Length: 175
Image (cartoon, rainbow, N blue to C red):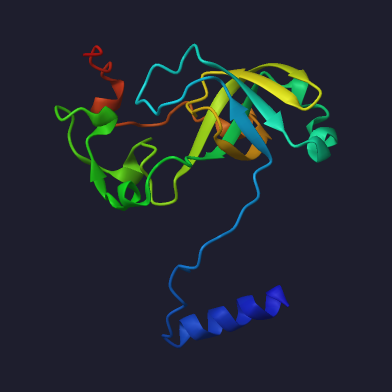
């Protein structure tokens, strides 16, 4: 039936009809794991040495088979402590630093996103049954993990990637 939908969409487009807008209904996801690391408050930086355990649901333990062969994994998580009212900001100063140019929130790595989703590539230190130990994950203790994927350099690395100048500036020292 998907093929029929594609044909119908193409016909509508050719005759000048607009496709429906982006859906606004909520999406419901069930976490597959939880982050445990002892970090209780969100922070803009300083995650490099934070070790975290991803406690994967017991019923998904077999789904981890083979993950220990990878040096890095991609963790998709829900920034559950970001209040709804903070998810409405369309522009922010990166790193919370007013000296940096204001950017659209989707042009930053801020946790104050409309969807409150976080994504991080982190080194996988070890696996013990349903527990993955990682370092550098910018998620606080109790954060729900929505997905885990292996990092594949041939797909996930872009050596010629371009970034704005402010990204390359070191963050200001903590005050």
